[in-house]
Every structure is written in C-alpha cells, then in structure tokens.
Image (tube, rainbow, N blue to C red; front, side):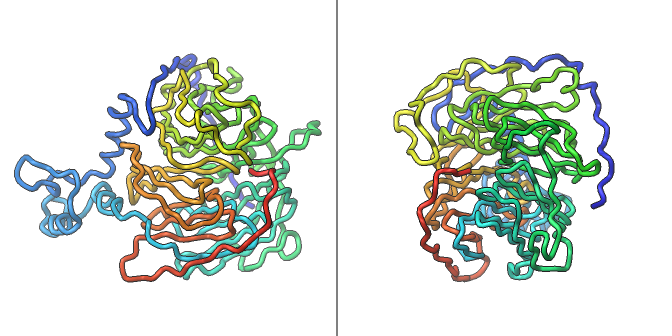
Length: 477
C-alpha cells in the first residue's frame, strides 16, 4: 500500500478556551428549536431552492414548489441568465423524486446482512453479512459482483466496513482488535483470506494491553491516510496507515463507544457516541494540551448507536436506543456532562426487550439537540441513520433503518415522516442512498439486500423473498 505521511495539524484552535456551556431546550416529538429554524433550516432550504426567476408565477410572487416542466421551460428560455440549472435548481427537481418504489432484489443470503454502503461516486456498493462474506457490486454493470470476499479473524459478525476514498482498499472490522484491509482493486473476483489474496491485519491493540476488545465502527479519513475506530473498551483509536501503527488512543466514554467518524475533510475534528448516552466532539489539535473532549452533547436517554456528519464540521445526527434520531450543532456543546437521569428500568436491554411505553415521550432535562425525530425503532442491533445526499437532495432528508423491518425517511426541517419503506422480515440495520440518483438500498437481518428507486418507466419490481432462519442469539451489535 502506498500512503503519504500524515499531514500536520494546527494547534492555534486550542487557544480559544473551553467549550461554551450549551443551553438545553424543551421540545416535543419531531419538533425543532428556534435556533434550528433560523440557521440549518435556512441552509437546507438554500441548497434546494430554485432560482427566483424560475419560481415566479407572476412578478414579485414565488412558489415554494415549482413543477419540473416549468423549471425546464425556464432553463431553455434562460430566465435565470445562466442557461443552465444551478446545484440548488437540480436539488429542487431531484429531491421530490424519493426512492420509494420497489423493492428490487439485489442479493440474498442465509446469513443476516449487517452493512450496506455505496461508494462516494455511486459506482460500487458494499454489503457485509454476519457469516463472513463481503460482496462489492458494480452498480453500472447490472449489480454484477465485482469482489466476493471471504473474511478471516471474524468473531460473531462483521461489525463494519469502509471503502477507501480512491476505492482501492476496503477494511472490515469484527469483535476483535484486528481490522483487516483488502486490496479490492485487484483483478481477482474471489478473495479468500490468505488463500487467494492477503488480508493484512491492522492491530489496534496498544503495547502491553492484554485486554481483548472489539471494533464497532471504522472509517477512512477523507484523504485515505488514516482510520478512526470505535471500540468496546470505551476508546477511540486513530491508525496511521503510512506508519502502520496506532498514533492515537483516546479513553473517550464511560462505556462502549459504538460509533465514530471524522467531522469533515480536514480530519481535525472527530465525533463519537457511546453507551453512556453522550455524543462527544474531539479536536485533535487540542488533545496534547487538554487531554479531554472539546465538548459534550447531552439529550439521548439511552446509548448512542450511530452518528453521521453533515460534512461541514458543525452539524451531525445520531441514533439512540431511546428510539430517536437527534440533530446536533456542536456550537451548543458543553465542556462537561451534567446529570443524566435514569428514566427506565435498570434491567432493560435493547437487544431482546421492547422499549418501555412510558419512556417513549420522556425528555432529557438538559437536551442540547436541535431536533428530535421519532417513529422508527432502535432495538436488537446498532441501527444506523444518515443525511440524504447533498448532490441530489441538498441533505434535506434524514433516513434510518429500523428494528420494525422498515426504512424511514424524515424531512429534516419539518420533522415530518415523508416515507416508510416496508418489505423486510427482520431488522434493517443499515441502508444507503445513492449519492447521485434517487436510489436507496436496505440490508436486513432477513438476509436480503433490497433496492428502492423512483423508476422512470414501468419497471416491475423483482422481489427477493427472505429465507427462514434460526432464532438469533443475544450478542447483537
């Protein structure tokens, strides 16, 4: 592997002092705060609002939703003076075509599907199954299997995969300290670990640390030089691929760290979420001098299962075992965590118990989130949530898998549920929206990978029927 040395980091950001004490807010189900209405709502609308000269019915009056035909006529007549659509014009057209038709079958397995991810350009799709198979499909070639990977060093399940930005390498994690990396750019279709191809093991354990732990989440940095991982030993790890070693270990949470990601392309900021119910922000430029999180965000009443960055170093969303998705602005973070009340039975376990009915409407007294989205289920496994693509929707939606076997799509600004995709016969742990087209793929514990689209013709869905399987154990991640 050829990776350049890690870029330097500016420490000047550490001179600004501690994080401000963010204020809590009281919001009901799927409600937003005033700050949210004044800022991210406007940013979202700006990304998907057509040019004013394309949206006017008559001088001085604009329509909130402009028909595609009217916008095409306006473009051909050059009403905007540009002779083409802007990115916001394109988003206004594409974002109304939700991927809700189908599903079409992509693949099926006797093993539960845990991971589903499109590559950044949408040319490839990665699916990971509990039984140890990872398949990479070529989307443009009729979903042909480009790479069929049989993993090694697997404990219980594949917990996560990540494709490098240049799409040459894929890493996969399990409930061990070893993350394996595979060259997916080779010409060989079948990749049997250390038989037909080498799956290099990257050791995330620190010298002298004899405690076994597992990796729940792993991500490449935008430049492909580093990996960030969340682990069951309450820590975050950053792995330098050029030096082939751990260059940073952060004792991050009071319990399992279930999810982690880089905040933006700089790699300076890291977001994490754990079973201590907290989301945290880490500034790598300040860790040497401060040795603590840049800030803490409170609001979830149960553990955080997943988070996704908007990519701007400011906003992110998280799924929680309190059956909610929350939207955050890191400028509201506190320098320390305040009292987090215990609002349900201590013996409750999300892996096999239903969430207590009386707890579904409870709110954290110091909730710092901007918005809360309810309707889906976050039970049985670490259900994932995402912003919809910037190119085609302006990130105006949030979508999530669900333990009730469905995929949910919410309007980010209003909080309204705009779609519920119902097909699977098991929890949908992961789902992925194509970065360019109105296409969404869901992966379920029923072993099926299903594709949802907004078809441009009279296509008839080709369904994949889930296969019957044995009752699962309780070690669900």
